[in-house]
Length: 350
Image (cartoon, rainbow, N blue to C red; front, side, top):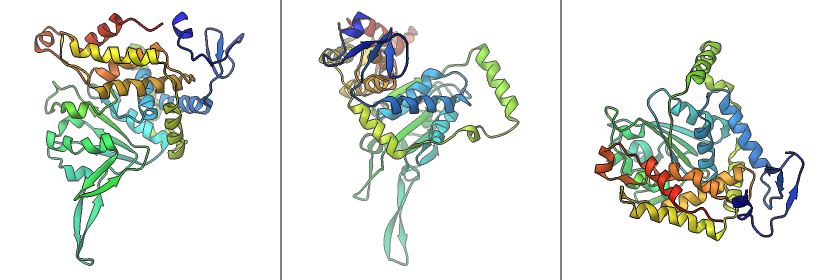
């Protein structure tokens, strides 16, 4: 509690309350937020409720997807086939009143199949650009690691700059723009390792594990009750493009103290000097931790970031941005384990 209190801005009034009743409360304290986050919180709960109609468990994945949306980031979802990676992305898109496009990546997919191509119009005697499926708000890329590097490179500009340049012409994409990509583990047959430059453009890498016994039983029961009905029919659409952009702007206004900015920098710099890591995190990773921690703070109804918000982002933000040395990789040590150790070894700001 002492850690949390010391990171509350000085001008933040605190009023004791007897019980949780509106606003954000932690251990009997009520924080008067300078930002209007009640509507954002309510919308987040609605999204969780809608996805919960179909998705069993996977609460952390759902939280990460929502945080990625609020932080204007892209997410890479990794897991073995059949653990609801694609379904989760489709359901999130269904709950939002935005443009949605799905691209199935295959080994023979060409960049023009994603971005679009110029076609000669015989009537006008000129070339006309036909937009590809990337021109939408929410893009689901299924099995992204099944396409070779040439096709992956087509995503570099659009993921980073939210624009496409074709034949010298710039085509900006309308906000919000978010890429949700799924992939099977690299050791699965017929997959390619994604380029480091592309991985660095994903805000989160979300690992989806198998459900436990109780969740597996619930999945079977729900499928039995559906009677072949479509899962997406249960999902209500309620959040518009304008509302999402408004929430994203609110997240940008969330405060973070200087000592917490230094804390983020210490974590990132520590990855570059760790003896178990061949490649450390780039400055883009520190910006990603900043944006993601702000999103988690806003989702909790706070207009300020706490150390716990930063800790929560560490693994999802960094595990795909660092490379374990070959010797440690052969020993079975993962980037997730190293990142957790780095975070534990750095003193939390007081």
